[in-house]
Image (cartoon, rainbow, N blue to C red; front, top):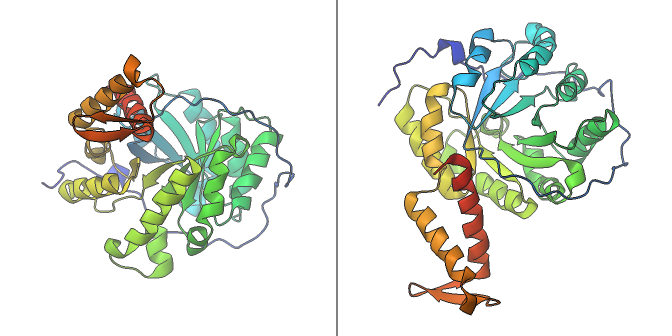
Length: 327
């Protein structure tokens, strides 16, 4: 099947703009981390996460009607250099008119090494989004410095950080970056694979050869307790191929996929939702461990299979996801 909708309003440029490396005009007090007690987070599905250019009024107006789990208001790749300042100035209005349907809303800023990044971060923080997506994260320091800016400007703890993993250096440092997810003070809760930039930086032309790096992201995200989103699929008219790639990403362990057009939402929601069979099995595991005779047991037999407490934790997580999406 080939998508037949008019895609022009949603076409997002994947061109990366080369910016001169310089220190951002605002840096936080590095090395100082405010204590933040660990909180129990409400599960938030991130099956379908749609980039929406901050400069595109027509696309912004459609957010409330979309079935995606989250949107990323984009100040980076989707906005031309001449429009970056005006796009940033629109953030306050975008969040003041936030849709009644409470989908998660993040802001992707420009790199802090660019001429726009520091001002983007401060403007985004003032809007109190659910998250700020940091591009070109290479080291833990990139996350920590951004978190310090939020702390120094009294951003609520509910404002989280997402990190783009899109450079060779990020992959080499992905373990230490992911470890920040275990520290609530870092605010880091999600990785986003920047597959287009990885292709650009490495010269790899076939997604099959990205698979080892994608799996490395999965391992790091799980070690850090982070969610993980797959990169965009560029041929937004080929919905069959997109659905296949979603299925592959779900099988690899990704939690969802970043999208460039609303036509991709339904396929992503289906691919990253637990199946009816998986939900039924998870319920049976939870019910079995709740039986009085299994109290305190670490291992039980269920339907001819060995089931451990770790399977109970997996079942509870799956059931929370199913409840959140109404599956």
